Length: 496
Picture 1 (cartoon, rainbow, N blue to C red):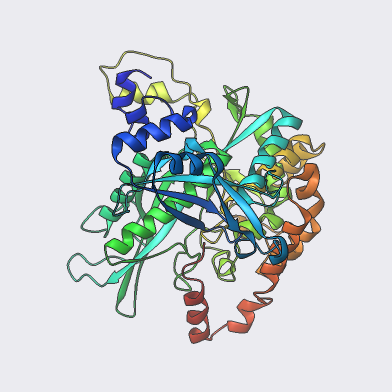
Picture 2: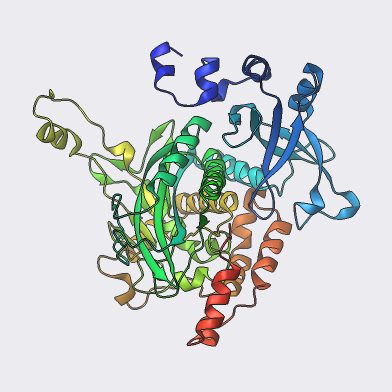
C-alpha cells in the first residue's frame, strides 16, 4: 500500500502496518502490540442472542500473547447458545486477525479481535451465527457463481430532557441540523470511532422521528454503512450498535434501536441494502436499467419474506412498527423508489452521474461515470431487534432461491407495485406477530436447511424463542390499553 493510500485510511492498524486488513498476519498483530504498548487483548464474538460478547486478557508475555492469537480460548457454549447442552458445552473461540481494531473505550491500551467458534473436534461450530452466514455465502456462490454484499441503515433514538431552546418539532427531523436537531455530536463521534476500527461508514444524518413525551424528548438519527460482503456487513452492524451504546452512555444518554418507542410515532427500522456480484462485478443494473438477476433476487426476497421476519423482527413490538401508513411494509411486494413496499429499488446513478457532475461543477472535464455499480436492492422489513448474522444468512438463502427459481421473473412481475402498497388488494401480508413469524419459518425450513446452511436445531431454537413471546393477537388484546402498551415497549427497549 502506498503512503498516499495510508494517509486517507482512518483504520488505525492499516495505517500503522501499511497493509490492508485482509492481509493481517499473527506477526503483524504481535508487532503492533509491541510497538504501540498494547497491554490488554479482548476476544469478541456473537452468540445465540445476536449480541456482542467479550473475553478479556491481560497480556503477560510474548508467549502468552502468541498462545492467545494461535489457539484462542475455551468458553462455555451452554451459556452462549440455547442448543448447546451443559454435558458437552466446551467450545473454542479463535481470533480472526483481519478484524483487529484498537478499542476506543478501554482505559488501558487494548486490542480487540472478532472470533469464530469451533467444536471439540476443531471443526467450525455449525450453528454459530458467523458460521451459518459463511455457509450461506458459500452455498450461494457454489450454485450461482454470485456473492452477496450488504449494508445496513442503523436507525436509533436518543433520550434526554426537553430542550426549551430550539424545541424539536415532532415527526419533522429528517436531515435537520443543529440546533434544530439534537445530539448530532454523538452520531459524529460514533462514526469517527467506527472508521478508525475499520467499519465502512457511508454517512450519518438526523431522521424523521422527533418525539416529545412525558417530560422527555426522543430524537432519531441514522448511520448508514457501505456495501461489503455479508460476512463483514454483519460484524460491522453489531460493532456499530456497540459503539453507539458506549458513546451515548458516556454522554449520559439512553439509546434505543427498538422498533417502536411510542405507539403512533415513527419507529426505527434497520433497512438492509443488498448488492449481487459475479466475478467481482455488480450485476443489479446495466445500461438498460434493472437486470433480470436483480428481479430474480427480488423474487427470492418476496418468496421468503414472511419467514425472514423470524430473523429480522424478533420481538412483539416489531409488529407494532409493521403497520400501514407508517413507511413500514406490511404487503409483500416491490417497486421503484416506493417507500411503502417491502423491497424497494432506490434511485441509482446510471446514465446521470457525469451530467450532474458537470452541471454542478462546470470546470470539470467530461468523464465516464459508471453508475451501475451503485445500484442496490433494499429490504425494508427488518428492525433493530434483528439477529443480524442470521438475517443476512437468510437473505443469502433468499437470493439463491430467487436466482435458481424457474418462476422468479414471473413472480417479480406479478408483485410489482407503483402506488401505495397498503391500498393494493390481493397482496400477501407479512406476519403480524412473533408467533406468526415462527410458523412461517417452520413452513420454509427446508429452504433454509438446503445445503446444510441452517442446522435444523437452530431453526427449532429460533421458532421456540419467537413462540415464547406468546404474542398472538397482541394488537387486539392491547388495543386502547396505554399502560400495557407502554410496559411492552419498555420491556423491549434495549433489544438487539
